Image 1 (cartoon, rainbow, N blue to C red):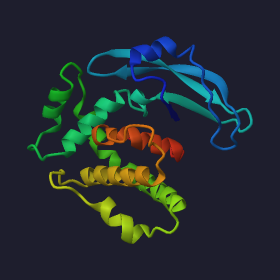
Image 2: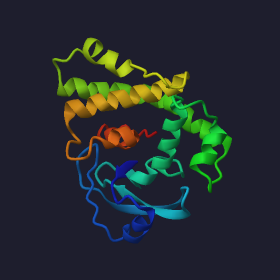
Image 3: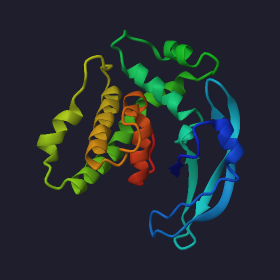
Length: 220
């Protein structure tokens, strides 16, 4: 799976997906990949429920294929990435008072039926992802800044849990991944051309981009 910034709007995506010029190289050998196939998936947001086409590209040298996913559906889920991320962040932040999964769903998805099992998966899956994501980010940081002692210089910052975070391990893991992502962005300066302030509003956009760079193929 690869995440590409086609456009931010699902309707625009549906108009351009077969005409946009895509140049993507294989993660393994660097060969220019070619169109291989496409398939249809469900896309659900609070505004629209529809089907979209996902392109699959192939490296003829390695025989590897990748699904090219838009940022607004940057995972194997069928729900909008940004709306799902907003849900996770608000659920984990209890500084404005505790809230249940269902009450928050009614608040953020008033016109979209989401099952309790799905919502619980959204908030819990980060625990398993953290084990994959954190070592990759710290490895990249170490390569960019070999003189840095991660344990003494960065670990306290990354492990800090602000007051108001829900007292659950998955909530703490969300916070720690966001902290590591802030550190990664600061040290590598990879996204200086983008608005870093967006990290405060939609941090998982940057996490998805980081994971794409690291070819982890694991998305929140």
